[in-house]
Amino acid sequence: MSASKDSSAVITRFAPSPTGSLHLGNARTAFFSHLWARKSGGRFILRIEDTDVARSQLRFRDELMAEMRWLGLTWDEGPDIGGPSAPYSQAERGELYQSLFARLAADGEAYPCYCTAEDLELSRKLQRMAGKPPRYAGTCRHLTGAQRAAQEARGLKPTLRFAVPNDRIIEFIDVVHGPQRVASSDIGDFIIRRDDGTAAFFFCNAVDDSAMGITQVLRGDDHLTNTPRQLMMLDALGLRRPAYGHVGLLVGADGAPLSKRHGSTSVQEFRERGFLPAAILNQLLRLGHTGDVDGWLAVADMPAHFRPEHLGRAPARFDESQLVHWQKETLERMSAQQISSWLGSGDSPDFVELVRHNVVLPADASPWRAVVCGELPPLGKEEQGVIAAAGPAFFAAAADALDQSSLDLKQLTTILKERTGRKGADLFMPLRAALTGQIHGPELAPLLKLMSPAMVRHRLKSHAQNS
Image 1 (tube, rainbow, N blue to C red):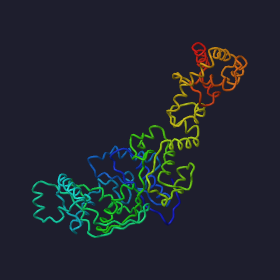
Image 2 (cartoon, rainbow, N blue to C red):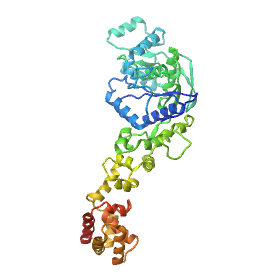
Image 3 (cartoon, helix red, strand yellow):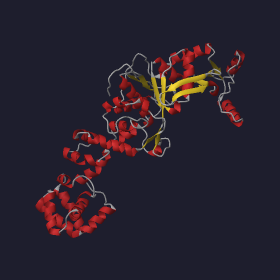
Image 4 (spheres, rainbow, N blue to C red):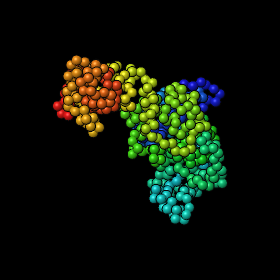
């Protein structure tokens, strides 16, 4: 993608956790962030959030980066190419986080918490019973040094909690949702360092956005409630605030969260099925974003048509039938050579040109290969009806006419019309059903020329005997 530079250049990022495949919803977030950076002539940064050591895997990171490259979402800074804010893997940024933890603790902005999972669950249960919203009760906030030493003598490893200020209003303007005001009294003290010493999402996500100079953070609106917490931490550390925008989540056509029951959900699955990057991006561009062009767009032209102010709050419904539409639009704009490479089976140029308007995915070409040089599957009910209505005599006459016409459909049908009196659909439909096993598909004349005379004769004679 390319876009002209201007004075409103922004720096955006995509910060996935390498714990699984690249989900379509996350791909959309990366895409929008990429578009915004390219539109303004800014920079797009890839950061890997892998502080969850138990779940993070290098193979997921590599697969995720491969899928992003396949989509065309290239980055200007990242774990593989470096940059001024390196390292771009949070697992390598622990020294920075520890120094900031120490600063917050020294300033009284954070404190060790020894509450166990059982303690926290009991506290939440009691709060719910009292009709109060469950939040951390501040149990360990005012422990004395002696009390902390006693807890550690029991072998308890503390988390580190941020001490939320009392009676403060956190304000920010969300790019999508507009002005936001949240009372700190509605937020309980929250964990910024796990009991194993690693940084929690709330903390390292916000710190790195500031440290890397991110100007615009785009993410799903399930993170909207995280923002006040992160802004309080940044303010306590004296770090610059980025701007935030929270877009509506991606859901299935039924309005439920996108999941396996809706079919494919990862970019890898769509790629393996044969969907094209331009088709996927054309649909993603219209999911939660209203542009100024309704028709198909080349990927290189998309940044110019991205409108950050037109990002949507409502959930965006993904419907694979719409993706099929953009797949067809993309295929229409591809050369026969490109389609041949996409099909990946070394098909002849004549075959590719013949089937290009009758396939959506590479697997759709297989039945037509069988028509040209393989075995036809059993006939469907509709095809059986057409064959039965024509009768054995029709196909016997067609087999005889083949000897005089070879594989020239015009000559074949002319002779057959004279011998049987059939014309129009009554003439062509039985031939198509017998020769291709289907009553719809590519033009029959060029398809016929790709078949061997022996195969055509065998198919016609089989219906002359068995109809």
